[in-house]
Amino acid sequence: MEVLTREQGALCLVKLAGEMAQNADAEKLRDNISRSVNEGKRDFLIDMGDLNYLGSPGIGALVSALEKVRRSGGNLKLAHLQGQAQKVLAVTGLDKFFDISPLEANSSATLAAAEGSTVEAVKAAKEQAVRTLIQVPSSEASMSEAGRRFAAFLEGLQLEQAQRFDLQVAFNEALANAVEHGNRSDASKCATAECAATKSAVHLRITDEGEGFDPKMAADLAADPFRDRGRGMVLMRTLMDDVTYNEKGNSVSMTKYLSHPSSDKQGSENHGQIR
Image (cartoon, rainbow, N blue to C red; front, side, top):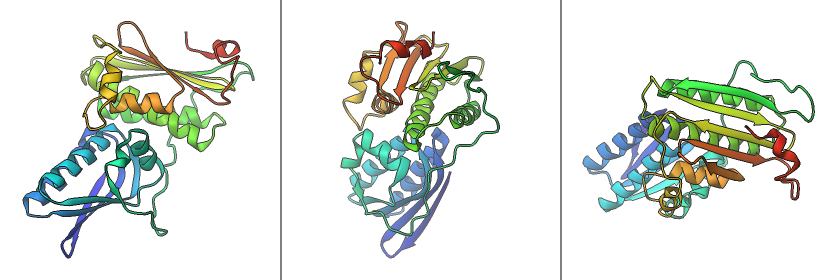
């Protein structure tokens, strides 16, 4: 991710470009804002028009920037907020805390096209589940590769853009939790994603090799949108229809219903769930 800064009178313009998905990306913004505040800058406008992806580390960086600027007696505004970044801030409730400038017509931001070489699973029959298994070491580079492989899996499905967005974000957040919190970024441990899709639903299960956690903590973590931890779980619960954890707390299962069945939601579609 690129962070470009220029001054326009008393205003400090900060332009974000690329993806703010990893901790290293978030640190670029934190360092930029901190340096500018220490230099005496007080008014900031963050242009998010060319930001293609905003993950939970990026959300934390924006909150940190807002708090630092306000403590210095300054103001921070977001501009060109749209697409994926706009939805992520909305579902976490943080859009209510930021001063957001109306979207301008000349913004060049677009949702990043899913990147991937080949689809790992092919539909065998209309009523059968498409399945793929993604297993990677617990490192940031491997997380990026897993994201590309999952995007390729989604490309083989006939999904609406909004459905692909929800699934991609939920997958990325669950995988990040597995790698960073479950396996503590220990590359000798793997994070495993089991993915299955039927005509009516997509089922995901992400498992790590860590000691697990108490899933009851999720509600407490989600209560405060300014809390550093728990934003990934808020996104997962908001964007997916069903989210459950195993007893140990090292595996999360998520379901996105594509046609929102009623009586057969827990019945006939069970054949597509990961077992």
